Amino acid sequence: MAGHSKWATTKHKKAIIDAKRAKAFAKHIKAIEVAARIGGPDESGNPALAEVVHKAKKNSVPGDNIQRAIKRGAGLTGDSVEYQTIMYEGYGPGGVAILVECLTDNKNRSATEVRTAMTRNHGTMADPGSVAYNFERKGVIEVPAEGTNEDDILMAVLDAGAEEVTPAPNGEFFEVIVDTAQLNAARTALVDSGIEYDSAESQFVPNLKVDIDLEVAKKMFQLIDALEDSDDVQNVYANFDLSAEVQEQLANEE
Image 1 (cartoon, rainbow, N blue to C red):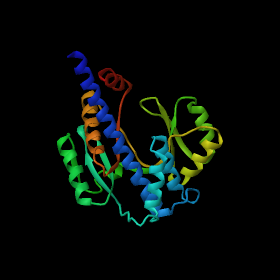
Image 2: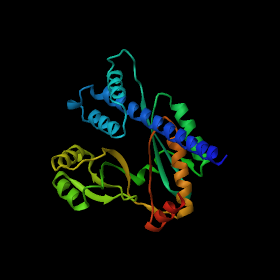
Image 3: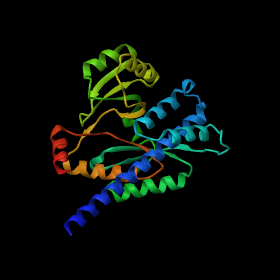
Image 4: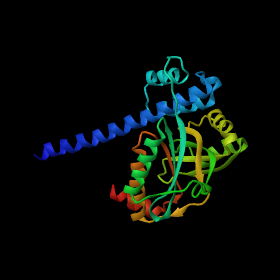
């Protein structure tokens, strides 16, 4: 029975991974449809579309799916795509400020799903404007840490308006922060320097981060997982920070 039990566990984990991958694919497809609807199907003349396609490919979304999404979004298939962006605000465990960005065709469904995820996972909803002031819209480029270093990245993007280059908490990539108007210039500077990037997009970056301990961190990630489980939720932004000690504790518990 031990072998059967192990197989059952493995099968269960695979099902979870497959389900998360399917949800991630759906969110990439939705972003592609919206970008194509707004700026047209030509990637060379639609930087926003080019970027979401780049990100989708980096996350292994099949090319056929991407092309169908572009055509559908641009109205070339006769289907209509009508999504709207809605921001929800709230507080997580430890008073962490949270912004939830939804892309949806049914705002009532989105509101219900976000509220349910919040209330069931140590979070509370907040009034519009009560949390948003903690964040600023910035261009964020993620560069894999393997094969490069902070100095090389900084040299590549300094003249393109980069404000800072910082290693991500997990050490797997660097974040390049730029003004949103300089996002394309910074991305081009990286490519011209032979440095590959994973994504380059506008995000809400916190003005001030708050340190959280291990217990709050576990509850926080539980809340983020619950929010991201909604097909309508595209991004979750929060202003927490993790010390090296808490990161190590989390790694030891995995």
